[in-house]
Each structure stands twice: as structure tokens, then as C-alpha cells.
Image 1: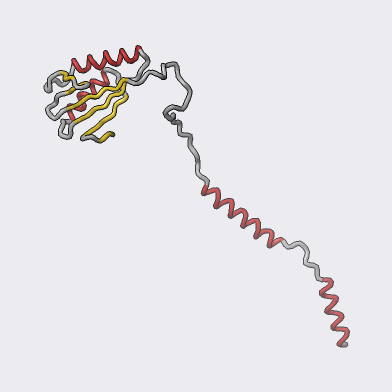
Image 2: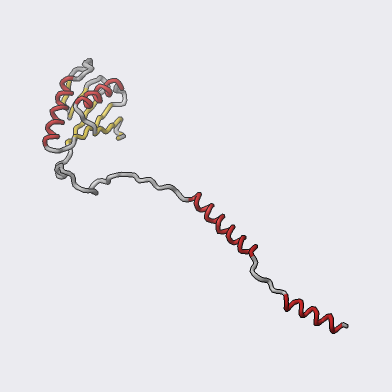
Length: 156
């Protein structure tokens, strides 16, 4: 009888077939799915930023060799407005007619040469903001848009 039990055990282990196990495959699929779900959240949406760097790009119809006309406008503490060190109008004159007329002439001349007009406004630290706005209004009338500000030696 003892020999019969030993042979019976051997038969049981030989007949035991594991077959295809689905549980480990489901675990693997869930791990892969979890990986892709986590990585999908980390994907950043890229947006196009259209910029044109200096010296790069297609040449336009304007003359690229023409340097821009650089104008320096100074607004003093007293309200005096100067254009390239030439004084215009009185500090009490809010509309700045002579200054505006000169800007318009400079802009027309630059447009005829296909050049840009670049203006740098140098306002003294104690200059009135209202006077700077008067200068900006004159530039708007002359259709000048390239403006840089400096105050106390710092450029903005």
C-alpha cells in the first residue's frame, strides 16, 4: 500500500498542466496602460511663436541696406522738448505744433527712402509725465511707432 501511494503522487504531478495564465497578462496590460496614462499628462502642448530674428528671414521689397533714422527727443524738467539737441515750442504749449510738423517731415522723408524712423525719448528724472505724453501724442500724429524710452540713463 505504501508503494501505491507513492506512485499515485507521481501521477498527480505529471497530470497537472498549468495552462495559459491570464492574471499575469492582465497585470502587465494594466502596468502598460498606467504608464501611458501618466506619460500623456506630462506631454506639453507646443504653440507656434512667430518671431523674426534680426538678420534672418526673407528680404522684403524695402531697401535692407538703408539704416533707420535715429532721432533723440529730450524732455527736460522745465518742460522744454528738444529734437536732436534743437529746442522746439515753449514749455507751456501743450500741442507742440513745430515739433509735430518736424516729425511729420522726417517721417515723410524716411518713408520716401523706405527707411524706418526710430525715436529715443530721454526724459529727465523729474520731467512731468504730462509732457512726455504730449511728445507721444505728437509722434502719434506723425505716425511714428518705433519708440524707446530712457530715464536717468537706463533704457526701457
